[in-house]
Length: 247
Image 1 (cartoon, rainbow, N blue to C red):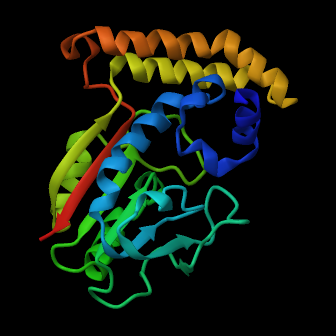
Image 2: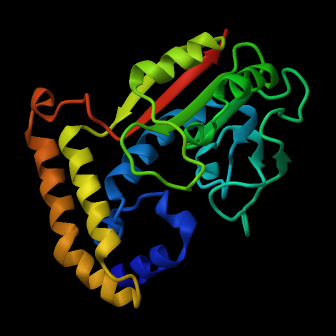
């Protein structure tokens, strides 16, 4: 059963975002995806009514928005990955969001802002299309390798992302740092191992995962429970998760 679920994960891109118990046996990005999933599971139900998924891609977290009446996916046509088989409802030109003022109750954007070079043009557009008092829920990396090349432009510290949001009219209501010093180092080591391990056939990768990556997941999971927060440190972490409000 575990191997069957693992093979499904290896062949289904969307499944890598919703972390399950058996992913310790097959998921090379276990920690970063687990922390994002935990945070979004907590915050996503707060977004009710008409929700815009900005930079939606495959809409991997759509199922978490249980209180949304409608869920619209917006993306740009040219990006660092193919949009084939993705559920994009509307494309935009990278500058102007094609909706009227105050059209959406809330906006969600996960792992998008690092790919937006003109963030000071886009945030006013997001501000324009969301209703007063509406939420902007975002995630963006602090420590992660370059990806979706060449459309990877920025990394935000906790201070940087909050400053950018406040400058563009949003008030930060809740901020979460995903991961910690030891977990982030472990995740990067797991990523490096994943880069070198053969991916095909699936069964070979899964066997090698048990030898090289699973022990790291187990060891760090135990340390996370045993070590005090002061030792684990939170000044190095994987992702920013921010819930902001339109003033």
